[in-house]
Image (tube, rainbow, N blue to C red):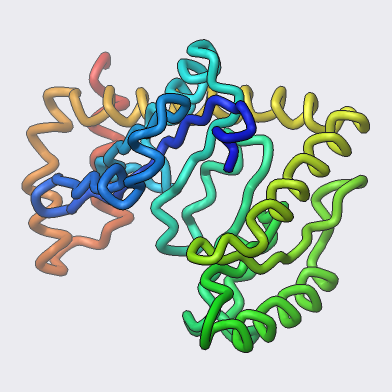
Length: 254
């Protein structure tokens, strides 16, 4: 729909990596058959490689490259497997939460942490036998969002129903996204948000590099297997093992 309207679209899809083999399926292009053949769309699947937060360590840089390449709309599809998967909120203008209508996500099982981050909630698969449960989920989340603390002075999160099969709600969802952009730009909140994101990302990169530097230290690297095995056997508490490694790292110059 977006490319037909003249937009250049980039889809950065993040696939979970196996903790045992380190591999990822990276099958996003195979399920985006029509889009993968569209000359105005670019799909880039990337593995998480153990990165938490539902994104890869280079997602932020990939966004900048796509913007520089002339793509005016960039969609980040995260791993989306739990409440910790919202690091992407510090990279994007708008955070959209997709919910299946029959996934056990009724109000009693609401993922409060991730719902609080959402600027828009979309109930998917709203077609056929799922229309009734999708309407129920929509009503429950509309009520739930009223109880959560507002993150914006000018925007209240909304709940829409969409169907990829019938196309119902897709155009309306895009209209909501454009409305969000207009309101946030006019208030100055979007510019302020982007500035805050740059600071967050600076510290994220520092944390990643410090951890790599820590693990690469010869004395620390030598102790890691021994301490890990002691923790696994229950012979050493994790906190004490961490303290020992930190002391080894701190005393490297003494």
